[in-house]
Image: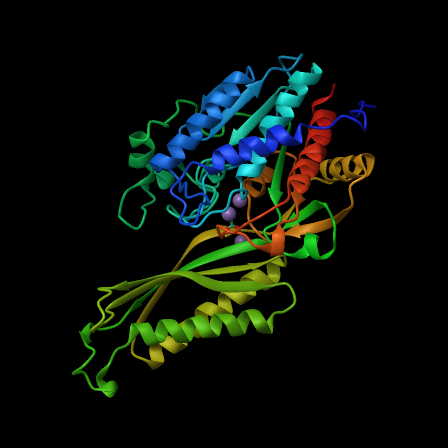
Length: 415
Ligand code: HGY
Ligand code: MN
Ligand code: MN
Ligand code: MN
């Protein structure tokens, strides 16, 4: 039986909070939050700060060909596969201070605490900063962990373009974070990810810890509607081939399909591009992505089929061309029951209130789960708000989840 850490073993909550606040200073946030979109100069600055901290914690930092960073703390058994503990430092354009960042810096705090306590584990510990988790600049989300898990090829990933037409491969080279490790060559004994819930469930239930049993599945459906550019003033209504009108009716339909599938399904549109995007030209082309999610695999695919069929009908009725490409997808994930139990036992041992939860957001843990036993730990966030610069958590919540992470990781890495 592997010894679990003593219940009085805790991380240093003040030190964790200080690192979160220091990292939050990096990035031109609109209202003081983060804006470290993948492979921007701000992302590069955040990476350098993280590497400095890893160096100071006596870890060796490796980087793979997708730019993912791996900071290793040696174990006592050189043949033992490492326990990986990670998340992401890249953010949304209106990113908060904690989405992804909390998981990476809490993983660093786990190592710092092990150093303080002189804990040696059989399995090495690898703190991981996955590149391009958000998929805001380069779709799809979780791109680097997807290449790591063999879901995407490196060429596919390198070719992904941002809205300005820049490719992932070019930008990775430009910021100087193209590593030399083959992506996915590393093998994991286990993978843990600590993350804010990004929804209202834990706070509403007054629970400090989310024991994450599953993650809901996702489709990102990119629609391209072809209308006809024409003058918005002199073109009679009956003559219009209005791709913008088709888009708005499709967005309304997506809302209806989600509402017809309650409870347990969400769908919406966060990004639309009009071309030529001129106030007095009817759009010749409209490109937008439907984000559809549910924990139920059958429902996920049924809703996708319904949305695509209805979109075609709407476009046809307006004489608008319609094509769709699935640019992101993962099936609902069941996390490793043994690791889930280790997280639950840690919360019990530490006296933190907890509940089982299904993750609404996607995470790199979803792809890690394809190649190793994986699970997550969650803490609440204020008002369930995330992907918003006003994202907020309490210092106590941050530390509690990091304590649970510490206990579950040390138990799995075997003292
Ligand atoms: O989209 C997601 O669920 C994550 O924030 N990338
Ligand atoms: Mn995240
Ligand atoms: Mn996010
Ligand atoms: Mn599928």
